[in-house]
Length: 78
Image 1 (cartoon, rainbow, N blue to C red):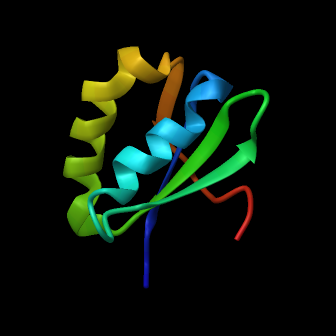
Image 2: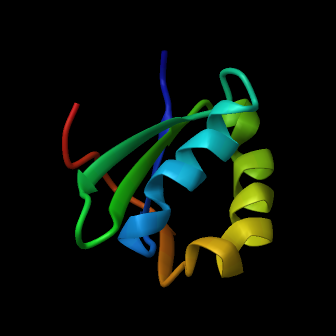
């Protein structure tokens, strides 16, 4: 399945929280940790859920101390 990749930098201690929030919405995205201590993650999002995931990220941004969030040209890993 084709997905859209977003990359984010959050507080590394909040990765598990972010992952639990995203996983509570079955099938809307996969969260992958690229560098835990640095808080770098990727979200692999089916196109039909891009808007929903972006809204969730906006809502929880203060909780996870979101520093950067953008659509990536490619994945860092598969």
